[in-house]
Length: 400
Image (cartoon, rainbow, N blue to C red; front, side):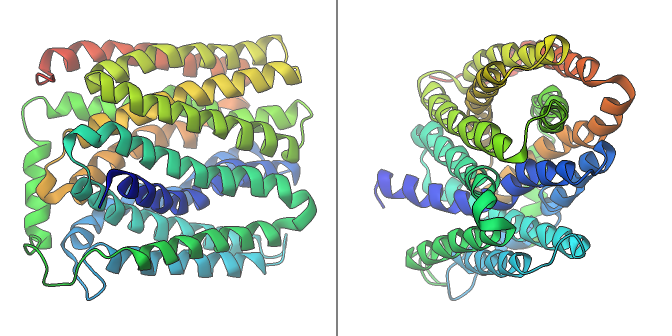
């Protein structure tokens, strides 16, 4: 498979995975805040993404699985079809009477996407040579954010005309397009290539990798790089609603223009990680990322005119995209390729668990402290994270 074909395949697969996350992160909070749901409840809805934190529990079986559809494809295709079915069911769930059912279906979408993610991460490790990690992780992050753009941006904006039903049917159509792409990808029959290690051996290899000297600093680095950003980001959309902006405006500004800037940032992050040692790329992006977080704090203190909201949103998404792609390249560069899906999943789970407390506490802290103090705290945490570059740099392996 050629490099463009590899990158195109990964982009499509990660796009499907971004759909439910984008809906939950941008569309759902905006819609619920318009309906009068409290900030504490909106913050608690991050629990719907629990499968992304728990997927390590079943990742060894996904990594070890084989079927007549192919080792990776035999997992990816059923998950994409399951997601499409959940989207169709959500499209015909009446609101507000069916709110509980809708939340359960969003949870199932996340479960299917998280399980697919294990297999797709393993496929990426299998397909990408070391010199393509920067571009490959750009495809990974760009694809995921295109899915977020669709699920939380363009389709939310279009819901003013097509309604929530049209939003979910659009998500189902994208999932089915991904399924068609997966079906067309010929990974190989069950007996082709060496047999993967059994699930127990996969788990043991990953455990050994996580206990190597210096691994603790790596895990702390991955766990905290988005702590402050998440604290701000989860409450930034409710803050804008409280400033008088509508869900449709947020769908255009944050979910669409912001994500377009994030996609551009992901491309730039891939190029940066391709030309510099990945740790240096992460460090540069982390320093630059503090600026937009400080600007969000300034909006809460000084006021939030539309032009400033748009400019700050675009800058935050652009530099956040650079940082995310560089960090994912850093993570993939450190995996054991014999158990790539599970090892990368373990690092990704650390990343999700690291920022989860900030998402859960953000609503409570916003109510207790107010938006300015919350956004200031998030900025301070992002500054404090930079100190971890020192032990990571001392223990980093030589990179050409």
